[in-house]
Image (cartoon, rainbow, N blue to C red):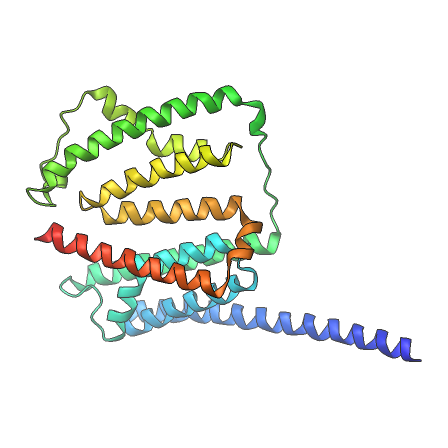
Length: 291
C-alpha cells in the first residue's frame, strides 16, 4: 500500500513539474508575441517608450530563459550582457524619458531603435529554436593535424608582431587627435606587415581550439591580451572590450565543467570588481582621447 502511494506521489510530482514547465513556456511565448506586437504598434505611431518597453520585455525573457542552465547558456548570457552594456543599456535608460538618440532626427532615431530591437528579438528567436531542437555539435579531430598547428603558430607570431607595429604607428597618430585615426591615418609600414596583421584574429581563433599544453595556451592568450590592451592607448575601447569577451567565452566553452566550480559568490564578487575597473579604465580612455 505504501509503495503504491509512493509511486502515485512520484508520478503526480513529475506531472506537476511538467505542467509547471509548460506554463512557464506559455508565459514566455506570450511575452514574446506581446513584445513584437507592442513594438510594431509603437513604431507605427512613433511611441518611443513603447519601443523601449518591448525591448525590455525581450531582454527579460532572454535572461529568464538562459538562467535555467548557466554553464550551457553562458555564451548567450554574455552576448546579451555585452549588447546591453555597449548598446542597449543607455538607449533604454534614455528612452524611458524620451531622450534616446537625442540630437538626431526622428527618422534616424526610430531606424536605430528598430535595428536594436531586431537584433535582440533575432538572437532570442535563434536561441529558442536551437534550445528546442537540441542540435548536436560535431567535434573535429585536431590531433591529426599537428603540422597545421605549427603553421598557425608561426602565422600567429608574425601577425602579432605586425599588429603591434601597426598599433604603435597608430599611437603616434592618435596623439594628434582620436579622429585622425579614421580621417588621416594611412600606414607607412611595409605592405607585407600590414597584410600579416590582418591574420591576427583568424590565426588566434584557429589556434586556440587545438589541443595543447596549458603553458602554451596561456602564452597565446597573453599575447592576444597584450595586443588587445595596447589598442586602448590608441583610443580603441570597443576592440579591447570585445577581445576580452571573446577570450572569456572561448575559455568558458573549453572548460565548461571547471567553470561550474568557479561560479561562487567570491568569484562573482571578483568578476564584478574587475568589470568595474575595466569600466573606469574605459572612461579614462574616453576622457584622454577627447582631450
